[in-house]
Each structure stands twice: as structure tokens, then as C-alpha cells.
Length: 88
View 1 (cartoon, rainbow, N blue to C red):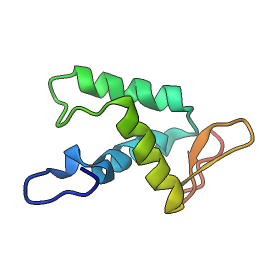
View 2 (cartoon, rainbow, N blue to C red):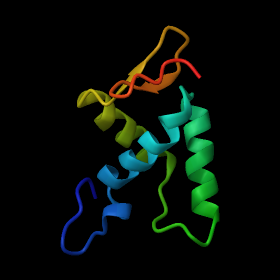
View 3 (cartoon, rainbow, N blue to C red):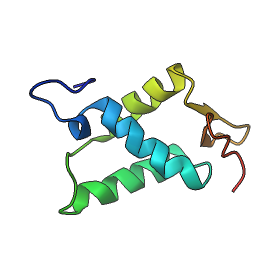
View 4 (cartoon, rainbow, N blue to C red):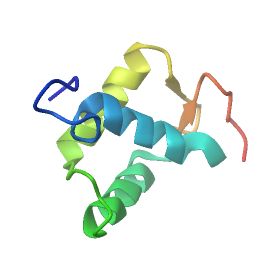
């Protein structure tokens, strides 16, 4: 489930979910609750490619933090560390 394979699409993997989360962080820092709300909205639409629960969101955020793609500011908000979207 972490990486896509022959039987798991990228949208079902944590790698794909991480890409969605980075897309949501493009317009500024967000809290974990805000990111979960965005993923929840995606889960509700018919256009969702894969369902992801809260545990997958946390695992994807851990993965992004470990590779240095995201960071946490002093207010506890998550931001894109690569593109430096610290301020809105």
C-alpha cells in the first residue's frame, strides 16, 4: 500500500496520497484537520480514485516529513518545505 505496484494504482498508495497532500499545501500552510477535511471531501465525491482513511493521511504526512517535503511552523501548521509556502 505504500508504493504503487502491479496491483495497486498510484492513487491508492501513500506515495500518491502524499502528492495530493502537497497539492493542497500549495496555497499556504494547513493544519492536519484541514488536510483531513480536504481528503474527506475527495472521498465523498464520485471522482475519487481511491478511499483514504485518517491513518493513511497521517502515514503520508510522516513520509513527506521524513523526506523533507513538508515541515511544521511555530504555529503547528504544515507547509510545503520545498516551495516554501510558509505565508499565505
